Image 1 (cartoon, rainbow, N blue to C red):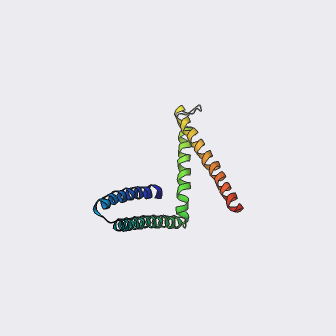
Image 2: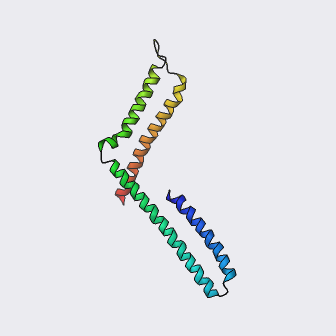
Length: 142
């Protein structure tokens, strides 16, 4: 979030400095006065950028604290796994028992959903485990 947030204000601030600089050039006659005003404007822009970055850092810190507090209780830690398990169980029951009285067949409409779930779960599990191992190896080597 901070990249687009910072670039939004940075690009706007840079164009503002350019336009104000052009206005100053037309109004101020002395090179010293012009340079002093431009330096003051640049200092104000940098102060604004720093305040935006500090606000973003505070926001990120508050989110991290909220995530920590969410993981303190057993119930909040188990919401996602229990919800995920329930939805998968419900989906499996629908797939297995949909029109399967007497003979077993899977409705062709369910096949793309099953494939998508399988791909997502395999990539998420093995991909995340691979990334965790790679990160751990890199940290241990430093």
